[in-house]
Image (cartoon, each protein chain N blue to C red):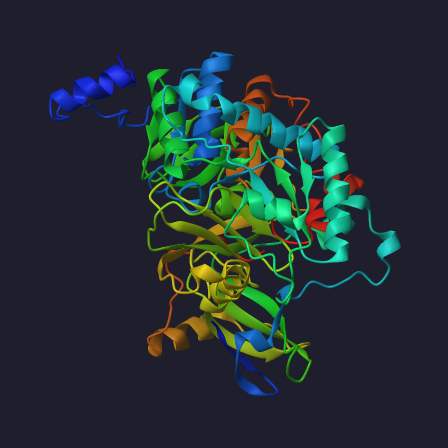
Amino acid sequence: MLLIACPYCGNRPEIEFSYGGEAHRVRAAQPALLDDQAWTDFLYMRSNTKGVYAERWRHARGCGRYFNALRETTTDHFLAFYKTGEPRPPLDSLTEAAREAGGPGTAGNTGGET
Amino acid sequence: MRRQSFSALALIRGALSAHRGWQPQWRKPEPKPSYDAVIVGGGGHGLGAAYYLAQEHGLTNIAVLEKGWIGGGNTGRNTTIIRSNYLFNESAALYDHSLKLWEDLSQVLNYNVMFSPRGVMMLAHTVHDIQVSKRHIHANRCNSVDNEWLEPKQAKEFCPPLNIQDNIRYPVLGAALQRRGGTARHDAIAWGYARAADALGVDIIENCEVTGIKLAANGAVEALETTRGLIRSRKVGVSAAGSTSVVMGLASIRLPLESFPLQALVSEPIKPIFPCVVMSNTIHAYVSQSDKGELVIGAGTDAYTSYTQRGALHINSHTLDAICELFPQFRRLRMMRNWGGIVDVTPDRSPIIAKTRIPGLYVNCGWGTGGFKATPGSAHVFAWTIARDEPHPINAPFTIERFRDGYLIDEAAAAAVAH
């Protein structure tokens, strides 16, 4: 079970959370203006990254709020938690910090974030 | 290469010679610089596609590239349930095509895949379950797929360990039974297809990861960069399950896939007690007994995407709660092993077996949590699609474009759970 640090409540077990899928996907202000392919991309296509993935979690059985996390999907180690609306933390500093802490690096990853 | 044939006589002969005469069942060739077609992914679906390409379409200069070892992914990690009682016409056609291929596959491949049509019984625990089950039964019958309704007593007759008392949280109110469904031996399907494909000249190349997809000036597939060198081919079929997004990403193709861990576990081996397969979608349990005597139990997917091939304990624990309630006599059984596989899930829980926008690049993915049962049928129609550059009528609806065009085959809503 994952230990997830809600930015509002601190460390909590995974069973308190629900998963919200890929983060930083922005719904178009006027979806009707999108062509079919762009709308399909928004609705269905996912990066499904093998490597560092930005994803949403909701503290469903806690404060109820959504937030974002960076997780290495080849190890399931979290690299960062941040509030919705905040920019995605730069990868370089995180992997550096993780390496210093003896945590997971990113060596051997193949999929890139698009 | 002349192949030893398996038969009762061969077994007796082997026994008399202390089993010293058995040969390797397939070669371990070095990759050639070029092939007529290459399959990426050496699971059952990929090896089967190579076999049918060689057997039915005469393409014998082909290779299967496998990052690890064949059958080491989801083919070797699933709970081997085989059934075809899907709701929609498109799904019923695809899965029943597969079930029919399973029925004589051991004879066709001369390799015992241990297909055992012992019956798959899906339990109903609520009024809604009963309605959905009966709707499935009627829909299946319209598609000539066998499925029948059992009252609780009949369900217990079919599966004596089942607890049908009404004092449990979700009492058994009935069940839908597909008698033609059952199980098979997971490794045997990979090995059987590998052996049969190899005999037809297919090169099976393990420890060979694809690291790049090279396109020609006209935009068509030209070659694959791999950890064992450049391999040219104008036809590439990707059958890489949980890693499909990664492989197709090499050609900048985005797919409607998310890869989740799916876990399974087995108990210590016990004497034969469990005669069929029992599934419960509502309280999420499925169980059968292997020929070794272990209870084979399927858990659910974890909540998050991952490539780790492992999941969290609470997922297994949840499934065991349900198993113990349905089969109280199993409460004192010890679980022996658990493991995970990475399953590629589409939004409508139906697969994609299709051409892509890149000429010569084909993809077979999205089998999610239920691909094992479909192995022969999937491989068969994928081979057709690659050989003829057009889908077989059975997989024609299973395109990538269905998400754009709104023709979803929404088994997700039909089953309401992973299936």
